[in-house]
Amino acid sequence: MSGPQTVEALFARFGPNYRWWVTLTALTGTISTILSSTIVVVAQPDIVGALGMGHEEGQLLSTGFLAANTGFMLLNAWAVERFGFRRTYAVSIAVFILASLLAGVATSTAVMVACRVAQGAAAGLLQPLSMQVIFLVFPAERRGTAMGLFSFGVVMAPAIGPALGGVLVDEFSWHAVFFLSLPTAALGLVMSFFFMPGRLATGPARGFDWLGCALLALAIGALLSGLTDGQHDGWNSDRVVGQLTLALLATLAFLTWQAMAPAPLMNLRVFRHGGFTAAALVAFIYGGAIFGSTYLLPLLTQVVQGYTPTRSGLIMMPGGLVVAFVFLMAGRMADFVPPWIPVCAGLAIFSLSCWLLSFIGTDTDFWELAIWILIGRIGLGLTMPNMNVGAMRALPPDLFGQGAGTINFFRMLGGAFGTNLIAVHLERRTQLHAENLGPLLDGGSSTIEARRLLENLYAQGGLPEVIRRDAAHEFMTRMVEAQAQMLGFRDAFLVVGVLCLVAVLPGLTLRQKPPGYLQR
Image (cartoon, rainbow, N blue to C red; front, side, top):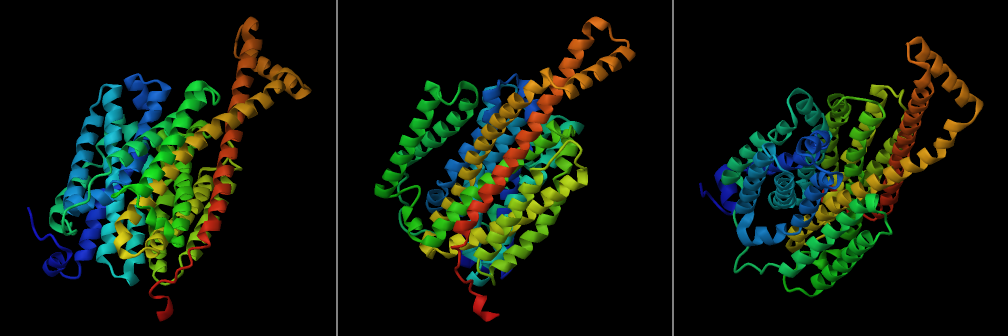
Protein backbone atom coordinates (compact mmCIF):
# COMPACT_ATOMS: atom_id res chain seq x y z
CA MET A 1 0.00 0.00 0.00
CA SER A 2 1.43 3.36 -0.99
CA GLY A 3 -0.85 5.83 0.84
CA PRO A 4 -0.10 9.48 1.59
CA GLN A 5 3.57 10.36 1.90
CA THR A 6 3.73 13.78 3.56
CA VAL A 7 2.99 14.49 7.21
CA GLU A 8 0.38 17.08 6.19
CA ALA A 9 -1.46 14.55 4.00
CA LEU A 10 -1.39 11.96 6.79
CA PHE A 11 -2.81 14.46 9.29
CA ALA A 12 -5.52 15.33 6.76
CA ARG A 13 -6.41 11.65 6.39
CA PHE A 14 -6.29 10.49 10.01
CA GLY A 15 -6.92 13.75 11.89
CA PRO A 16 -5.20 14.96 15.08
CA ASN A 17 -4.91 11.38 16.38
CA TYR A 18 -2.41 10.64 13.62
CA ARG A 19 0.49 11.67 15.84
CA TRP A 20 -0.48 8.94 18.31
CA TRP A 21 -0.82 6.33 15.57
CA VAL A 22 2.63 7.07 14.17
CA THR A 23 4.09 7.12 17.70
CA LEU A 24 2.54 3.70 18.37
CA THR A 25 3.98 2.44 15.09
CA ALA A 26 7.44 3.70 15.99
CA LEU A 27 7.24 2.23 19.50
CA THR A 28 6.11 -1.17 18.21
CA GLY A 29 9.27 -1.51 16.14
CA THR A 30 11.53 -0.02 18.80
CA ILE A 31 10.32 -2.33 21.58
CA SER A 32 10.57 -5.39 19.31
CA THR A 33 14.19 -4.74 18.38
CA ILE A 34 15.46 -3.58 21.77
CA LEU A 35 13.84 -6.56 23.46
CA SER A 36 16.10 -8.80 21.41
CA SER A 37 19.18 -7.06 22.81
CA THR A 38 18.49 -8.11 26.41
CA ILE A 39 16.32 -11.21 26.18
CA VAL A 40 19.30 -13.25 24.94
CA VAL A 41 21.28 -12.54 28.14
CA VAL A 42 19.71 -15.32 30.19
CA ALA A 43 19.67 -17.72 27.19
CA GLN A 44 23.32 -17.17 26.27
CA PRO A 45 24.74 -20.07 28.34
CA ASP A 46 22.29 -22.47 26.66
CA ILE A 47 23.06 -21.10 23.18
CA VAL A 48 26.82 -21.33 23.75
CA GLY A 49 26.50 -24.92 24.95
CA ALA A 50 24.13 -26.01 22.18
CA LEU A 51 26.26 -24.59 19.37
CA GLY A 52 29.61 -25.50 20.91
CA MET A 53 30.84 -21.90 21.04
CA GLY A 54 34.06 -20.81 22.70
CA HIS A 55 34.08 -17.92 25.17
CA GLU A 56 35.06 -15.31 22.57
CA GLU A 57 32.40 -16.55 20.13
CA GLY A 58 29.80 -16.43 22.89
CA GLN A 59 30.82 -12.86 23.69
CA LEU A 60 30.10 -11.93 20.08
CA LEU A 61 26.40 -12.60 20.67
CA SER A 62 26.31 -9.46 22.80
CA THR A 63 29.18 -7.36 21.43
CA GLY A 64 28.24 -8.07 17.80
CA PHE A 65 24.71 -6.84 18.42
CA LEU A 66 25.88 -3.75 20.28
CA ALA A 67 28.56 -2.89 17.71
CA ALA A 68 26.11 -3.09 14.78
CA ASN A 69 23.45 -1.25 16.76
CA THR A 70 25.82 1.56 17.65
CA GLY A 71 27.27 2.01 14.16
CA PHE A 72 23.97 1.93 12.28
CA MET A 73 22.49 4.67 14.43
CA LEU A 74 24.60 7.19 12.57
CA LEU A 75 23.30 5.85 9.24
CA ASN A 76 19.75 6.80 10.21
CA ALA A 77 19.91 10.44 9.11
CA TRP A 78 21.24 9.50 5.66
CA ALA A 79 18.75 6.62 5.23
CA VAL A 80 15.73 8.76 6.16
CA GLU A 81 16.87 11.57 3.87
CA ARG A 82 17.58 9.17 1.01
CA PHE A 83 14.66 6.71 1.30
CA GLY A 84 12.19 8.35 3.68
CA PHE A 85 10.76 7.21 7.00
CA ARG A 86 8.44 4.55 5.58
CA ARG A 87 10.95 2.61 3.49
CA THR A 88 13.70 2.86 6.11
CA TYR A 89 11.37 1.60 8.84
CA ALA A 90 9.85 -1.18 6.72
CA VAL A 91 13.19 -2.52 5.45
CA SER A 92 14.69 -2.42 8.95
CA ILE A 93 11.77 -4.34 10.43
CA ALA A 94 11.86 -6.88 7.58
CA VAL A 95 15.59 -7.49 8.13
CA PHE A 96 14.97 -7.89 11.85
CA ILE A 97 12.19 -10.44 11.28
CA LEU A 98 14.30 -12.48 8.87
CA ALA A 99 17.33 -12.41 11.19
CA SER A 100 15.20 -13.48 14.16
CA LEU A 101 13.73 -16.42 12.24
CA LEU A 102 17.16 -17.60 11.12
CA ALA A 103 18.65 -17.18 14.61
CA GLY A 104 15.82 -19.25 16.09
CA VAL A 105 16.68 -22.23 13.89
CA ALA A 106 20.45 -21.67 13.65
CA THR A 107 22.70 -24.71 14.00
CA SER A 108 26.09 -23.03 13.47
CA THR A 109 28.06 -20.33 15.21
CA ALA A 110 28.59 -18.30 12.02
CA VAL A 111 24.87 -18.08 11.27
CA MET A 112 24.00 -17.16 14.85
CA VAL A 113 26.58 -14.35 15.06
CA ALA A 114 25.56 -13.02 11.61
CA CYS A 115 21.92 -12.95 12.70
CA ARG A 116 22.75 -11.08 15.89
CA VAL A 117 24.71 -8.49 13.90
CA ALA A 118 21.75 -8.09 11.51
CA GLN A 119 19.37 -7.67 14.46
CA GLY A 120 21.65 -5.00 15.90
CA ALA A 121 21.81 -3.14 12.59
CA ALA A 122 18.01 -3.06 12.31
CA ALA A 123 17.66 -1.83 15.90
CA GLY A 124 20.29 0.85 15.26
CA LEU A 125 18.31 2.31 12.35
CA LEU A 126 14.95 2.20 14.13
CA GLN A 127 15.69 3.90 17.44
CA PRO A 128 16.77 7.31 16.08
CA LEU A 129 14.01 7.13 13.45
CA SER A 130 11.42 6.76 16.21
CA MET A 131 12.73 9.78 18.10
CA GLN A 132 12.95 11.82 14.90
CA VAL A 133 9.38 11.11 13.79
CA ILE A 134 8.02 11.93 17.27
CA PHE A 135 9.71 15.33 17.20
CA LEU A 136 8.33 15.82 13.69
CA VAL A 137 4.65 15.28 14.50
CA PHE A 138 4.38 16.78 17.99
CA PRO A 139 4.45 20.52 18.78
CA ALA A 140 7.28 21.76 20.96
CA GLU A 141 5.15 22.03 24.10
CA ARG A 142 4.07 18.35 23.90
CA ARG A 143 7.32 16.68 22.89
CA GLY A 144 8.23 15.82 26.45
CA THR A 145 5.10 13.71 26.88
CA ALA A 146 5.76 11.97 23.58
CA MET A 147 9.41 11.40 24.49
CA GLY A 148 8.25 9.77 27.71
CA LEU A 149 6.41 7.19 25.59
CA PHE A 150 9.50 6.65 23.43
CA SER A 151 11.70 6.23 26.49
CA PHE A 152 9.15 3.81 27.90
CA GLY A 153 9.82 1.53 24.95
CA VAL A 154 13.60 1.93 25.06
CA VAL A 155 14.04 1.07 28.74
CA MET A 156 10.97 -1.08 29.38
CA ALA A 157 12.32 -3.72 26.99
CA PRO A 158 15.61 -4.20 28.92
CA ALA A 159 13.61 -4.26 32.16
CA ILE A 160 11.29 -7.12 31.17
CA GLY A 161 13.58 -8.89 28.67
CA PRO A 162 15.51 -11.03 31.18
CA ALA A 163 12.28 -12.13 32.89
CA LEU A 164 10.66 -13.19 29.64
CA GLY A 165 13.87 -14.83 28.47
CA GLY A 166 14.20 -16.83 31.68
CA VAL A 167 10.64 -18.16 31.43
CA LEU A 168 11.08 -19.12 27.77
CA VAL A 169 14.40 -20.89 28.40
CA ASP A 170 13.06 -22.84 31.39
CA GLU A 171 9.70 -23.75 29.84
CA PHE A 172 10.73 -24.25 26.22
CA SER A 173 14.31 -23.76 24.97
CA TRP A 174 16.70 -21.04 23.87
CA HIS A 175 15.15 -21.10 20.38
CA ALA A 176 11.98 -19.47 21.72
CA VAL A 177 13.66 -16.21 22.75
CA PHE A 178 14.20 -15.28 19.10
CA PHE A 179 10.54 -15.81 18.19
CA LEU A 180 9.02 -13.71 20.99
CA SER A 181 9.33 -10.37 19.17
CA LEU A 182 8.05 -11.59 15.81
CA PRO A 183 4.31 -10.80 16.30
CA THR A 184 4.93 -7.20 17.38
CA ALA A 185 7.57 -6.73 14.69
CA ALA A 186 5.15 -7.96 12.03
CA LEU A 187 2.46 -5.62 13.41
CA GLY A 188 4.89 -2.69 13.19
CA LEU A 189 5.70 -3.61 9.59
CA VAL A 190 2.01 -3.53 8.62
CA MET A 191 1.34 -0.29 10.49
CA SER A 192 4.28 1.43 8.80
CA PHE A 193 2.54 1.26 5.41
CA PHE A 194 -0.39 3.22 6.84
CA PHE A 195 1.17 5.70 9.25
CA MET A 196 4.84 6.28 8.49
CA PRO A 197 5.54 9.31 6.27
CA GLY A 198 7.62 8.90 3.14
CA ARG A 199 10.60 10.92 1.98
CA LEU A 200 10.25 14.51 3.15
CA ALA A 201 13.53 15.92 1.80
CA THR A 202 13.31 17.73 -1.54
CA GLY A 203 15.90 17.53 -4.26
CA PRO A 204 18.62 14.87 -4.68
CA ALA A 205 19.79 13.05 -1.56
CA ARG A 206 23.29 13.61 -0.28
CA GLY A 207 25.88 10.96 -0.99
CA PHE A 208 26.73 8.20 1.43
CA ASP A 209 29.86 8.61 3.55
CA TRP A 210 31.53 5.30 2.72
CA LEU A 211 34.88 6.26 4.21
CA GLY A 212 33.31 7.46 7.44
CA CYS A 213 31.28 4.25 7.69
CA ALA A 214 34.38 2.11 7.20
CA LEU A 215 36.39 4.06 9.78
CA LEU A 216 33.54 3.88 12.30
CA ALA A 217 33.13 0.13 11.84
CA LEU A 218 36.88 -0.35 12.22
CA ALA A 219 37.01 1.77 15.38
CA ILE A 220 34.06 0.07 17.11
CA GLY A 221 35.09 -3.44 16.05
CA ALA A 222 38.71 -3.01 17.13
CA LEU A 223 37.70 -1.44 20.45
CA LEU A 224 35.22 -4.15 21.43
CA SER A 225 37.58 -6.90 20.27
CA GLY A 226 40.42 -5.41 22.31
CA LEU A 227 38.26 -5.13 25.44
CA THR A 228 37.04 -8.72 25.03
CA ASP A 229 40.45 -10.26 24.23
CA GLY A 230 42.18 -8.31 26.99
CA GLN A 231 40.45 -10.42 29.63
CA HIS A 232 42.04 -13.60 28.28
CA ASP A 233 45.20 -12.68 26.39
CA GLY A 234 46.39 -10.04 28.87
CA TRP A 235 46.28 -6.28 28.46
CA ASN A 236 49.95 -6.12 27.53
CA SER A 237 49.75 -8.76 24.80
CA ASP A 238 50.73 -7.65 21.30
CA ARG A 239 47.32 -8.58 19.95
CA VAL A 240 45.33 -6.50 22.46
CA VAL A 241 47.68 -3.51 22.32
CA GLY A 242 47.44 -3.60 18.52
CA GLN A 243 43.63 -3.74 18.61
CA LEU A 244 43.29 -0.84 21.04
CA THR A 245 45.85 1.23 19.12
CA LEU A 246 43.98 0.57 15.90
CA ALA A 247 40.72 1.61 17.58
CA LEU A 248 42.29 4.90 18.73
CA LEU A 249 43.77 5.70 15.32
CA ALA A 250 40.52 4.80 13.54
CA THR A 251 38.55 7.02 15.94
CA LEU A 252 40.86 10.00 15.34
CA ALA A 253 40.68 9.42 11.58
CA PHE A 254 36.87 9.19 11.75
CA LEU A 255 36.52 12.48 13.65
CA THR A 256 38.98 14.22 11.33
CA TRP A 257 37.12 13.01 8.26
CA GLN A 258 33.74 13.97 9.71
CA ALA A 259 34.96 17.56 10.02
CA MET A 260 35.96 17.55 6.33
CA ALA A 261 33.41 15.28 4.64
CA PRO A 262 30.75 16.95 2.43
CA ALA A 263 28.05 14.58 3.77
CA PRO A 264 29.28 13.23 7.14
CA LEU A 265 27.67 10.40 9.06
CA MET A 266 28.01 12.47 12.24
CA ASN A 267 27.52 16.18 11.69
CA LEU A 268 29.91 17.72 14.20
CA ARG A 269 27.88 20.94 14.11
CA VAL A 270 25.58 19.43 16.72
CA PHE A 271 28.40 19.75 19.26
CA ARG A 272 28.50 23.52 18.78
CA HIS A 273 25.39 23.56 20.96
CA GLY A 274 26.46 23.19 24.59
CA GLY A 275 23.19 21.65 25.73
CA PHE A 276 23.49 18.86 23.19
CA THR A 277 27.11 18.15 24.08
CA ALA A 278 26.20 17.88 27.76
CA ALA A 279 23.28 15.57 26.94
CA ALA A 280 25.59 13.39 24.83
CA LEU A 281 27.96 12.96 27.79
CA VAL A 282 25.04 12.06 30.04
CA ALA A 283 23.76 9.63 27.39
CA PHE A 284 27.15 7.90 27.17
CA ILE A 285 27.34 7.30 30.92
CA TYR A 286 23.62 6.50 31.10
CA GLY A 287 24.06 3.83 28.42
CA GLY A 288 26.93 2.28 30.33
CA ALA A 289 24.86 2.30 33.52
CA ILE A 290 21.70 0.71 32.14
CA PHE A 291 23.39 -1.91 29.96
CA GLY A 292 26.09 -2.57 32.56
CA SER A 293 23.53 -3.12 35.32
CA THR A 294 21.38 -5.26 32.99
CA TYR A 295 24.50 -7.38 32.34
CA LEU A 296 25.37 -7.66 36.04
CA LEU A 297 21.97 -8.39 37.57
CA PRO A 298 21.18 -11.76 35.91
CA LEU A 299 24.74 -12.95 36.63
CA LEU A 300 24.53 -11.73 40.22
CA THR A 301 21.26 -13.49 40.96
CA GLN A 302 22.30 -16.75 39.30
CA VAL A 303 25.93 -16.89 40.51
CA VAL A 304 25.62 -15.40 44.01
CA GLN A 305 21.96 -16.05 44.87
CA GLY A 306 21.68 -19.36 43.00
CA TYR A 307 18.44 -18.37 41.23
CA THR A 308 17.05 -20.18 38.20
CA PRO A 309 16.86 -18.16 34.92
CA THR A 310 13.12 -17.61 35.51
CA ARG A 311 13.54 -16.38 39.08
CA SER A 312 16.51 -14.28 37.98
CA GLY A 313 14.36 -12.54 35.38
CA LEU A 314 11.32 -12.17 37.64
CA ILE A 315 13.26 -10.18 40.22
CA MET A 316 13.49 -7.34 37.68
CA MET A 317 9.77 -7.34 36.93
CA PRO A 318 8.64 -4.98 39.75
CA GLY A 319 11.07 -2.33 38.52
CA GLY A 320 9.91 -2.87 34.95
CA LEU A 321 6.26 -2.36 35.90
CA VAL A 322 6.86 0.73 38.03
CA VAL A 323 9.08 2.34 35.39
CA ALA A 324 6.07 2.51 33.03
CA PHE A 325 4.39 5.06 35.30
CA VAL A 326 7.67 6.89 35.90
CA PHE A 327 8.17 7.39 32.16
CA LEU A 328 4.72 8.88 31.70
CA MET A 329 5.32 11.24 34.61
CA ALA A 330 8.86 12.14 33.47
CA GLY A 331 7.72 12.78 29.91
CA ARG A 332 4.97 15.10 31.08
CA MET A 333 7.44 16.77 33.43
CA ALA A 334 9.75 17.57 30.49
CA ASP A 335 7.08 19.90 29.08
CA PHE A 336 7.13 22.10 32.18
CA VAL A 337 10.38 21.56 34.12
CA PRO A 338 13.95 22.36 32.97
CA PRO A 339 15.60 19.04 31.97
CA TRP A 340 18.51 19.26 34.40
CA ILE A 341 16.28 18.80 37.46
CA PRO A 342 14.82 15.33 36.65
CA VAL A 343 18.04 14.24 34.88
CA CYS A 344 20.22 14.95 37.92
CA ALA A 345 17.62 13.59 40.34
CA GLY A 346 17.31 10.40 38.29
CA LEU A 347 21.06 9.86 38.15
CA ALA A 348 21.35 10.39 41.90
CA ILE A 349 18.54 7.89 42.58
CA PHE A 350 20.18 5.29 40.34
CA SER A 351 23.48 5.85 42.18
CA LEU A 352 21.65 5.17 45.45
CA SER A 353 20.35 1.90 44.00
CA CYS A 354 23.88 0.83 43.00
CA TRP A 355 25.18 1.73 46.45
CA LEU A 356 22.51 -0.48 48.04
CA LEU A 357 23.40 -3.32 45.65
CA SER A 358 27.02 -3.03 46.75
CA PHE A 359 25.88 -4.62 50.05
CA ILE A 360 24.46 -7.72 48.34
CA GLY A 361 24.98 -11.03 50.11
CA THR A 362 23.96 -14.65 49.70
CA ASP A 363 21.30 -14.14 52.37
CA THR A 364 19.73 -11.03 50.77
CA ASP A 365 15.97 -11.50 50.58
CA PHE A 366 14.27 -11.68 47.15
CA TRP A 367 11.99 -8.69 47.77
CA GLU A 368 14.74 -6.64 49.39
CA LEU A 369 16.86 -7.10 46.26
CA ALA A 370 13.84 -6.42 44.02
CA ILE A 371 13.22 -3.10 45.82
CA TRP A 372 16.86 -2.06 45.40
CA ILE A 373 16.55 -2.76 41.67
CA LEU A 374 13.20 -0.93 41.53
CA ILE A 375 14.77 2.21 43.01
CA GLY A 376 17.36 2.21 40.22
CA ARG A 377 14.71 1.81 37.51
CA ILE A 378 12.87 4.83 38.90
CA GLY A 379 16.06 6.84 38.51
CA LEU A 380 16.61 5.65 34.95
CA GLY A 381 12.97 6.42 34.14
CA LEU A 382 13.33 10.02 35.30
CA THR A 383 16.56 10.51 33.36
CA MET A 384 16.00 9.29 29.83
CA PRO A 385 12.98 11.29 28.56
CA ASN A 386 14.42 14.53 29.90
CA MET A 387 17.90 13.73 28.59
CA ASN A 388 16.51 13.22 25.08
CA VAL A 389 14.32 16.30 25.22
CA GLY A 390 17.20 18.40 26.55
CA ALA A 391 19.42 17.20 23.71
CA MET A 392 16.92 17.82 20.91
CA ARG A 393 15.66 21.11 22.35
CA ALA A 394 19.21 22.49 22.13
CA LEU A 395 19.29 21.96 18.33
CA PRO A 396 17.71 23.86 15.43
CA PRO A 397 15.12 21.85 13.45
CA ASP A 398 17.48 21.23 10.53
CA LEU A 399 19.74 19.18 12.84
CA PHE A 400 17.01 17.01 14.39
CA GLY A 401 17.87 14.02 12.21
CA GLN A 402 21.58 14.19 12.97
CA GLY A 403 20.87 14.92 16.63
CA ALA A 404 18.56 11.94 17.08
CA GLY A 405 21.09 9.58 15.54
CA THR A 406 24.01 11.03 17.48
CA ILE A 407 22.37 11.04 20.93
CA ASN A 408 21.27 7.42 20.48
CA PHE A 409 24.73 6.56 19.15
CA PHE A 410 26.34 7.91 22.32
CA ARG A 411 23.87 6.01 24.52
CA MET A 412 24.55 2.72 22.75
CA LEU A 413 28.30 3.37 22.54
CA GLY A 414 28.26 3.91 26.28
CA GLY A 415 26.35 0.65 26.63
CA ALA A 416 28.84 -1.32 24.53
CA PHE A 417 31.85 0.32 26.17
CA GLY A 418 30.41 0.13 29.68
CA THR A 419 29.31 -3.51 29.47
CA ASN A 420 32.78 -4.62 28.39
CA LEU A 421 34.57 -2.52 31.01
CA ILE A 422 32.20 -3.70 33.75
CA ALA A 423 32.85 -7.30 32.71
CA VAL A 424 36.61 -6.67 32.86
CA HIS A 425 36.35 -4.94 36.25
CA LEU A 426 34.18 -7.74 37.65
CA GLU A 427 36.68 -10.41 36.57
CA ARG A 428 39.73 -8.54 37.88
CA ARG A 429 38.16 -7.68 41.23
CA THR A 430 36.91 -11.24 41.68
CA GLN A 431 40.38 -12.57 40.98
CA LEU A 432 41.92 -10.06 43.41
CA HIS A 433 39.50 -11.02 46.19
CA ALA A 434 40.17 -14.73 45.52
CA GLU A 435 43.91 -14.12 45.90
CA ASN A 436 43.37 -12.22 49.15
CA LEU A 437 41.05 -14.87 50.59
CA GLY A 438 43.15 -17.84 49.41
CA PRO A 439 45.63 -17.82 52.34
CA LEU A 440 42.73 -18.28 54.75
CA LEU A 441 42.43 -21.87 53.53
CA ASP A 442 45.83 -22.79 54.89
CA GLY A 443 45.90 -21.18 58.31
CA GLY A 444 44.01 -19.74 61.23
CA SER A 445 42.19 -21.45 64.07
CA SER A 446 38.76 -20.76 62.56
CA THR A 447 39.80 -22.41 59.27
CA ILE A 448 41.17 -25.47 61.05
CA GLU A 449 38.00 -25.74 63.12
CA ALA A 450 35.78 -25.41 60.02
CA ARG A 451 37.76 -28.11 58.23
CA ARG A 452 37.51 -30.41 61.25
CA LEU A 453 33.73 -29.93 61.40
CA LEU A 454 33.41 -30.69 57.70
CA GLU A 455 35.49 -33.86 58.05
CA ASN A 456 33.24 -34.97 60.91
CA LEU A 457 30.14 -34.37 58.77
CA TYR A 458 31.65 -36.35 55.90
CA ALA A 459 32.50 -39.14 58.36
CA GLN A 460 28.87 -39.25 59.55
CA GLY A 461 27.83 -39.45 55.92
CA GLY A 462 29.97 -42.53 55.40
CA LEU A 463 32.74 -40.93 53.33
CA PRO A 464 36.01 -42.93 53.49
CA GLU A 465 38.70 -41.40 55.69
CA VAL A 466 41.26 -41.19 52.87
CA ILE A 467 39.25 -38.58 50.93
CA ARG A 468 37.61 -36.61 53.76
CA ARG A 469 40.41 -34.03 54.00
CA ASP A 470 40.47 -33.40 50.24
CA ALA A 471 36.67 -33.14 50.13
CA ALA A 472 36.68 -30.60 52.97
CA HIS A 473 39.42 -28.58 51.27
CA GLU A 474 37.53 -28.62 47.95
CA PHE A 475 34.33 -27.47 49.66
CA MET A 476 36.09 -24.59 51.40
CA THR A 477 37.79 -23.61 48.15
CA ARG A 478 34.39 -23.32 46.48
CA MET A 479 33.17 -21.20 49.38
CA VAL A 480 36.13 -18.85 48.97
CA GLU A 481 35.46 -18.58 45.24
CA ALA A 482 31.79 -17.79 45.91
CA GLN A 483 32.78 -15.13 48.45
CA ALA A 484 35.24 -13.61 45.97
CA GLN A 485 32.53 -13.48 43.29
CA MET A 486 30.13 -11.77 45.66
CA LEU A 487 32.75 -9.14 46.60
CA GLY A 488 33.51 -8.64 42.89
CA PHE A 489 29.85 -7.91 42.17
CA ARG A 490 29.74 -5.46 45.07
CA ASP A 491 32.71 -3.56 43.64
CA ALA A 492 31.19 -3.53 40.14
CA PHE A 493 27.91 -2.00 41.32
CA LEU A 494 29.80 0.59 43.33
CA VAL A 495 31.71 1.66 40.20
CA VAL A 496 28.47 2.00 38.22
CA GLY A 497 27.02 4.17 40.98
CA VAL A 498 30.06 6.45 41.06
CA LEU A 499 29.92 6.88 37.27
CA CYS A 500 26.29 8.00 37.48
CA LEU A 501 27.22 10.60 40.08
CA VAL A 502 29.91 11.88 37.69
CA ALA A 503 27.20 12.24 35.00
CA VAL A 504 25.39 14.70 37.26
CA LEU A 505 28.02 17.33 36.37
CA PRO A 506 27.15 17.60 32.64
CA GLY A 507 23.51 17.08 33.58
CA LEU A 508 23.56 20.34 35.53
CA THR A 509 24.13 22.25 32.28
CA LEU A 510 20.80 21.15 30.72
CA ARG A 511 19.11 24.35 31.81
CA GLN A 512 16.96 25.13 28.76
CA LYS A 513 13.47 26.20 29.81
CA PRO A 514 10.66 24.21 28.19
CA PRO A 515 8.03 25.99 26.06
CA GLY A 516 5.41 25.59 28.80
CA TYR A 517 7.68 26.75 31.64
CA LEU A 518 6.46 30.35 31.66
CA GLN A 519 2.83 29.37 31.13
CA ARG A 520 2.37 27.76 34.51
